[in-house]
Image (cartoon, rainbow, N blue to C red; front, side, top):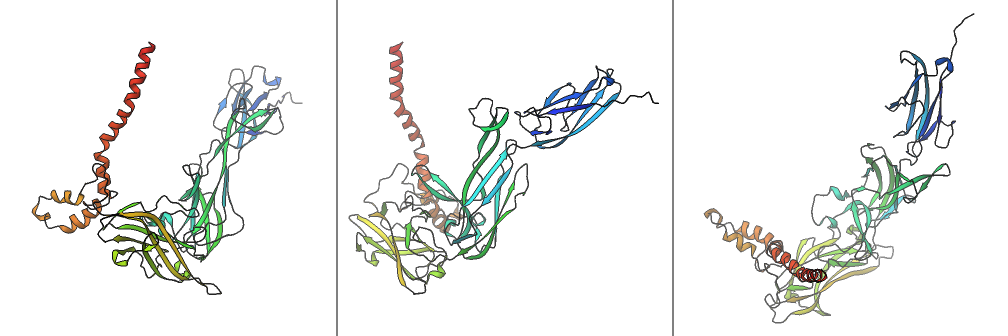
Length: 495
C-alpha cells in the first residue's frame, strides 16, 4: 500500500455575465474574463501562482481579470509553486475562445446581372462594410476584365480625358451650393464608416449610442452606393474587388459579371466651353462666357446626349451624317462670311471620334457696335437605326454671349494688359535667339498670350494675380480697420 497522496490544482474562468461554462468572451474592456485558482490543501495554503494568458502576457496575482486585445483561441496555463518558489507543484491548461463583437465584413451586392447601355449607369452597387475597432479601414480596389474601353485612371493624362471612351466606377458626390449631385470617377472604393458603440445593460452587452454611460467604441459600420459605367459595347465583363491594408492583402476576391449594350437614344447635342456639361444632371457651370470679342477664338465642345443627358460616345451605331455649326443673333442667321469654324479634334463631316466635336468659332467682321444675344447653334442630321428606319435630327444651342469690337468694350483689371509674347521677346538679348520666331511666337505666345489674347489666358491670369496680390490683401485690411477702430473706441469708453 502506497503512502503517496496525489492532489490536482484547477482554475475557474468566469465571463462578464458570471457564466463559468462558456470559456469565451469578446475582446472588449467591457467583457473581461475572471480567473481564480482552485488549490488543494495538500499543495499548501501559501502556494504561489503564476498565470500565462497565452497572448504574451502573464500575472502573479492569485485571482485576476484579463482582457484580450485580439480575437482567437488562447491557451491559458496556471503554474502553482511552493511557498519558497522552489518547486512547481502543479500546471493546469485550458483553451479560451475570444470573439469579435463587430465582425469584419465587406459585401458588394447588386440586383441581378450588371447590364446597362453605353454611357449610362448600371444597377446600384451597394457596398456594405463593418470592421472591429482595432482594424484599420481598408482601401478597396477594383479591376475590370473583358471591357473594350480603357479604365479612366489608366488613360494618358490629358485635360479632355472626360470626352474619351472609358470605363470607371462612379460615385454620386453632393454639390452643396446647388443641393444636387455630380458623377465622379473613383479609382478605389472608400466606404464612409460611422462608429458603433456598446455598453453593458442588465448584465448583457448591447449596441448603444455615444451618450450612453460607460459606452465604448466597438467597431465601425457603413454603406455607400456606387455605379459602373462603360462607354463601349461589351458582351461580357468581370468586375473584381480586392482590398489592401496593414491587416489584409488582397483578401476580398468578390467578382461580379455584366454586359454593356449599345445606347442609340440620341436626343440632343450639348454645347459648352469644355465639355463638362454633367452626366444624368445638366450643369450650366461651364457655359460659354457672356463677353467675347471680334477675331478672338470662341472655344466650344459639342457632345451627343440621350434624353437623360447621358453622353453617347459610340457614334458608329447612330448613323451620323454632317455636323452644321451656325452663329445666330436672336433668330437671325448670321452670314457664314462673317465667321469661321475651326476644328481642334473631330471633323464637321463626322463625329466618330468618340461622340464629340471640339473646336472654335471666330467672328471676323469689323464692328462699330456690339452684336448682342449671339447663340452658337449646332445641328446634326442622323439616321436612327431602328426597325422602322426613322430619319431624325438632333440639335443643341449654347448659352447666349455678346460679341464686341476689340477695343470697344474692354474692362481689364490691373495687370491684364500683359503681353507675354512681347515680354519674352524683349528679353532675348543673345543673337542666336533673335530669329527664333517659332519658339517666341508659336510656343511662348500661345501659352502666355499677347496683347490681343483673352484675359483668361494663362499668362494674363498669372500676371494679374501677382500684380494685384498686395492690393487685394491690403484692401482686406483696410475694410476691417474701421471696425477695429469702432471696437477700440467702445472698449475705451467702457473702461
